[in-house]
Image (cartoon, rainbow over all chains, first blue to last red; front, side, top):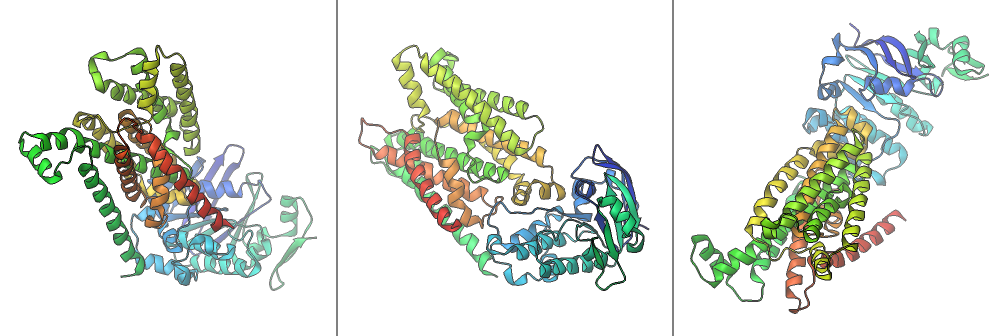
Length: 242
Length: 334
């Protein structure tokens, strides 16, 4: 059974009957030009926007699920993260346990281990670099042990090293019964890590499926409005404006 | 056990020891030397005499009032700063304190509620605070916390303008003097009956805020993250503002304007709570209570005849503390 199934998701001026499904263990990349509806799609899935349509989680409609329960299943990492107060790293990660109303030490340890931030648990968030902070925000979501990890452009504004690091962590999360859905602009990196692609254009699905079916020169050039050169056979894959 | 786990109880121990000491001092200091414990005991068992009278009728109500008002201001300041994610948020932003001031002012100006005597300003103040709060909630609709506080600011400005008009057209200099003095804040010349009015508002307001601790904690990371964690930011935000307005409105209605406590107490408490807005509530309330108790003691120690009002003192103490904090923050940001 699909882990998450979306049917006719519609949001005025942003999403137009978007339907797709994600299998357990899959990593889905939501791609498309700016304003195509990538963030709107992720935020609708996270319950932040009042989109119409149906979302099923392991066959159960999300509509009937309490917000708290939904938050346990779906973890959301926004594009821009910050902390209003100079909190310790450990405290921020612990906020990921809020839907569970506990502070499960094993979940916190695991999240910090997976993101490699155990050493900075006591440090204040404002003493960390951008790349270190990105791992803390990621650990916050992981601590909630979500079935579906929704990440909105998690690698924007990170250097090459941290881009790979973050993608590795997300890839690791998308295994077994868990999945990752992420919005991403770096198509070549996405081609390397993701199983399936959802290409959005003006709020509609322009193409959906495996890298070979979605990442074609024709589909991408049409969606982005510029000629794009694609070489998926190359290692690593190459996707660049022609 | 790790270091952080040991540090929290020790800090709160000092906090509450300080509060207790200030409370005891408030009972002990006054124009007549009276044994504190003996006087309290006499009052409790109903033994007549000067010590029982001074304790039961004057000093205990005054100390309890200072404690409650200070705790209310500290708690509501901490809650609002957490809600708005802004260290400059102040309880007066809810509009409730200006509303309370206006309500009380109308007592001095129009002589409303003449049958209630000394309770007239209190009840009119509570009514004014409630009215200002309702207007604020109506104006903001179901908006986000930032809009809610903007609405509060707008209503506070409106109440402030009406208050200025009341002052402008004061019927006689005595009414105006009485009003201005009342507005400057005081916890003296009030009895246990004032506490009976004040306490329910404090308990309900405090409980409303207390139950929103998860929201305050999550809001550290912004409204989007908070909503994605399954919390209702708008509903929770309205509850926090409602609670804060009840605390501040009743505090101002009882004791007048006591400035800077709501702003400064959360700042002083923040290091004790590891900056967590949800853990800040109790320490901020304790520090607010201690500050008002101490300020009231200083006000009492002034030479007789030249009374200095409580609100003036807290502002005189609070403003330099605030300047010092900004000085410290400036260095951290460099």
